[in-house]
Amino acid sequence: MIVWLVRYAEIFLKGKNRHKFERRLVENIKDCLKRNKVEFDSVRHVCNRILIYSGKDCSCLRYVSGISSISKSIETLQDIEIIKRTASRFYKKGTFRITAQRLDKEFKHNSNEINIIVGSHLVRERNAKVSLEHPDTNIGIELFNKKAYLFNQRIAGLLGGLPAGIEGKVAVLLEDSYSIIAGILMIKRGCSIIAMQKNKVSLAPLKKFCYGFELRTVKSLPKGITSIAVNDTISNIKKRKFNLTVFRPLVGYDEKELKKWLKYS
Image 1 (tube, helix red, strand yellow):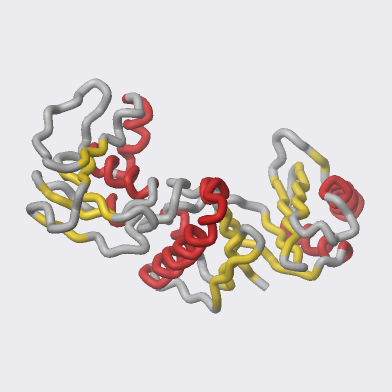
Image 2 (cartoon, rainbow, N blue to C red; image 1 turned 90 degrees about the vertical axis):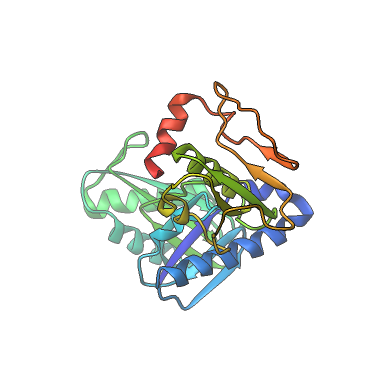
């Protein structure tokens, strides 16, 4: 069975409130899939993972704030013989590595033993060679939910951070492409944003990340908004006349890092 594994990182730091962040992330994932017309059977939160049962391409999820990585996987029983055979399906040619993670401690083999058993099988059956540092194929195995999940690719989330909408609404003053980066970084911090256009700026790069809320465009601050994000950098902090909290998310980034973000704008 094809299952997409979704991992998250910063949400782990939220302690007793973590379940609220996890629920919000699940909602935002469903919103992303529906907007991109990706069919799925179900989205489940299990053992610090989110499972998406879908045979379609779910790589659009890399734009969802809060996600650290995703993998298209095969779900199997926790049977070492089945795991060995399934791992063989992921090996094509060249060197390989097995990277097992046993979240379900009831399985009789620990992570290192799984690596050895499955790796030895590929060496014998496929005449494959091991490379721990630079493998051509890294076959991942995660055991939890009384199942095993095997995959050979991790697609990195572009933002990481927190799920959008968990931290309230912030206006973003759109003046140029750097303003788009400021908006994206506010989404990363868990905010849903409102675009306040001062200059004509394309919203297309920003909309790629707007899941879990509808991006509104306004000419003046709507009632109830108490904060605004601007495009100031460490080398260009402007005097602002706003009677509200001003966020400057770009101040912590140098020019090299900002140029990397500019590919989205």
